[in-house]
Image 1 (cartoon, one colour):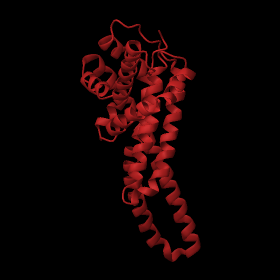
Image 2 (cartoon, rainbow, N blue to C red):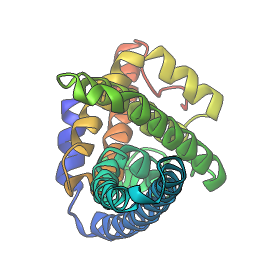
Image 3 (spheres, rainbow, N blue to C red):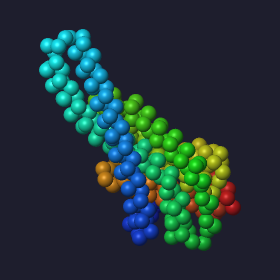
Length: 248
């Protein structure tokens, strides 16, 4: 896995990857802005509705204190949107990866495995379904972990390991589906869940670094593609079970 991560990092800023990097960053920023705007609208609406309800309960003399409280809540909501956008990066990058997984994997195969048969592109609809499922699960994990963030960092630990599980699964399956049907890719992921989770921890660490995490789709797909190919090579030389050997 260290070898896969090192090779993925070394390829991050090569000219072909730079093109994909710029496209993935642009799409990620669009998703982040839309997500932030949506969250802000919801919070402002809830704050305004709560202010009107409280004024009706406590009377017109409470208008000024409630107005001040509403302004403070709006500022807090804006800060919450910023923090939330950071913690929702796993969801955003999982969705972005579904658009560019094949382009990234094809470049990895061309550079590191020129003599091997190329994988079959994953249909965009199939990739998007997997990306949306992972994004929704990541949002659910964020909402579950959020209350625990105040308890001595327990929420951060929960969030990290859950992110490792989700992103390891997502990126492994996107890589494996180039060589196997979807059902077989999922079976291999379950069979080698320890390796997949370890790879997910590398990706979770990467996605936790601000700004750098915009490149998570490239790192995640590239490292999982290399890990899959390396495991296949070990199987072919030792006849031991491995991640992606059935395509021979």
